[in-house]
Figure 1 (tube, one colour):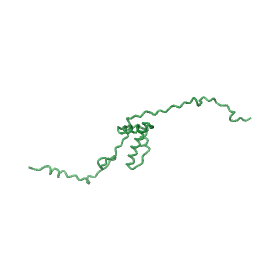
Figure 2 (spheres, rainbow, N blue to C red; figure 1 turned 180 degrees about the vertical axis):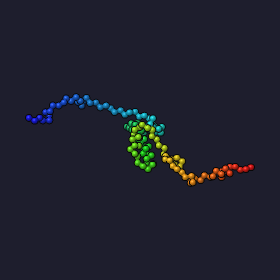
Figure 3 (cartoon, rainbow, N blue to C red; figure 1 turned 90 degrees about the vertical axis):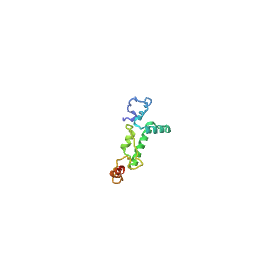
Figure 4 (cartoon, helix red, strand yellow; figure 1 turned 90 degrees about the horizontal axis):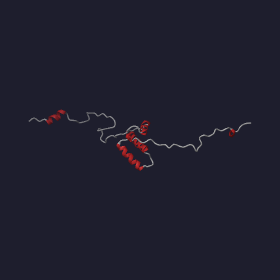
Length: 133
């Protein structure tokens, strides 16, 4: 005689649904040393506006915003590496955008031709300063 599926002996269920208790996930505390003072101020402001998000989530959002602005101004796409660094919250991320005056400071190294700049010759400057009496 063939056995039905229901006829097979069952193992005793040691883990019933009543015994399973979910552990609550506790997010590790945010180490605010990875934020600059300006980012900390922005984080406090965003925490007041968005009470449903955690401080870590808001810090990641601030950092992603920084790297995406840098990539946009450099005319390129955001890389997965940059996204990973921003989300890791392990390093300080900051970026100083280029100054509005060209050539004074820039986020990249830039060479300037000295022929284009009009600097008076030292002999001309020295002769105008020294006048014999």
